[in-house]
Image 1 (cartoon, helix red, strand yellow):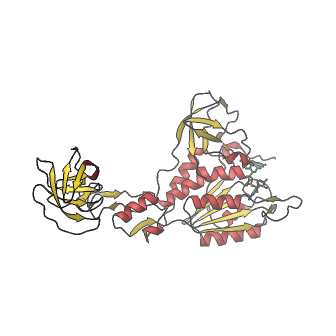
Image 2 (image 1 turned 90 degrees about the vertical axis):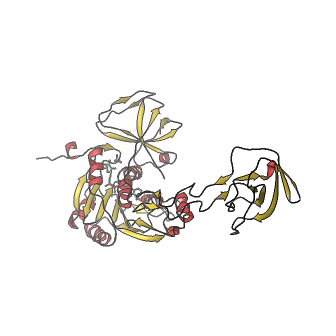
Image 3 (image 1 turned 60 degrees about the vertical axis):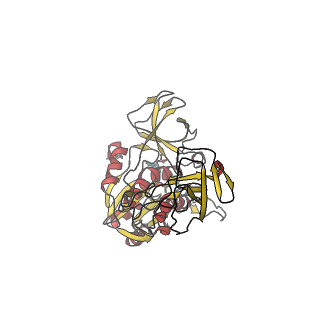
Amino acid sequence: MFVTVKDKEMISVKEALALIQNNSISLGVEEVSVSEALDSYLSEAVFSPINLPPFRQSAMDGFAVRSHQGGFYTIKEEIQAGDSKDIKLEVGEGARIFTGAQVPDDADNVIMKEHVLEKEEQIFLQKKTEKNNIRIPGELIKKGALALPKGTLLNSAALAFLIGLGIAKVKINKKPSVAILITGNELESAGESLTRGKIYDSNSIMLKMLLKKAGIEKIACYNVKDTEEDSVEVVKKAIENYDLLIASGGISVGDYDLMRNAFQTNGVCEKFYKINQRPGKPIYFGKKENTLVFGLPGNPAACFINYQVYVLPAIQLALGNESILLLKKATLEEELLNPTNKSLFLRAEVRGGSVKISENQNSAMLQSLVAANALVYIPETIKKIEKGEEVHYLEILQ
Ligand SMILES: Nc1nc2c(c(=O)[nH]1)N[C@H]1C(S)=C(S)[C@@H](COP(=O)(O)OP(=O)(O)OC[C@H]3O[C@@H](n4cnc5c(N)ncnc54)[C@H](O)[C@@H]3O)O[C@H]1N2
Ligand code: MOO
């Protein structure tokens, strides 16, 4: 009897994402210095240990005065930013002051330099303003207030904010270490000459760069020969030493597509194999203890798209970011047909709320992905979308 692989074996995009969400890994927490925390996620909320600014601070260069009805003030002192002088002022007196300096307790106003006439030790106020140009303590954040919630992505502004509060160390979720497994006897490295039957390996650099973008630091890359022995051996080594495996190629149904078997032989528990989508139908996801295993298709664009849709969310969950796969909406520039019974992920350019689907959607083609900034998601049940209708898309960083 002939046996065929039936479409019903495949799961939907939503089912696949739910399985990834339900099988996330957590790698614990580590405390690092703020300067080493870029692109990490806070494992706990941070509260401000100080008022910011810590004291009444001048917002302008000018004169801190103890106000009165008249326009003349006697200037008796100078206060620079950083000075710790404790200056007493009588009514009608003032001190020359600079932006960022501590305003004397007696002063109720900082008059901008441009608003006075100066003569020797006297100033005459020419213009009255509403603002007193004094930043009050805790104006930016109060001592004890929530500075950053748990799960915040520590970008450069976040790191500067923490340092500005005097916080030198932060607790972050440990980042997964990742092993990339590149399969295929046909692969040659760029720089080498291309002999008969060979092509250049593009997936290893693509996956490495995407992982770097995701903030992953420990990345190893193994080349796997198309033999059962080598596949099993490399998978074993990678599972022992890494938190996440991403295999490229060898995951379809050919006689030399050996990765699914290599995962199984190594005791990986399969969560799904094949998704009802185009491109990237052949995809494997499994778990062994606290290690996640992905087998992505070798076709470069399919590999890229499956990384964005499935692997990146798994990484973000491990990092402690739960807001994964947030789809946005934009309007279609041209009518779109889905003649398949599959979900589609179409590379596209989204500009100013309008979606232009890239012309070439070939799963082996990288060139048309270069300008793409989005993957438009068309669910399997949708057959036609009119020009001007809304579609959902996933923003991609690459
Ligand atoms: N009988 C069937 N054949 C195939 C099916 C199917 O359902 N039934 N699915 C097709 C689809 S869709 C895809 S996608 C591919 C996936 O195949 P594999 O994941 O097993 O990948 P390979 O066969 O190893 O490679 C596919 C293609 O990609 C090229 N490749 C592989 N690695 C790299 C790399 N690192 N850099 C650049 N290019 C790479 C490889 O040479 C092949 O041309 O299966 C279809 N077949
Ligand atoms: O998924 Mo394959 O990528 O359609 O060629």
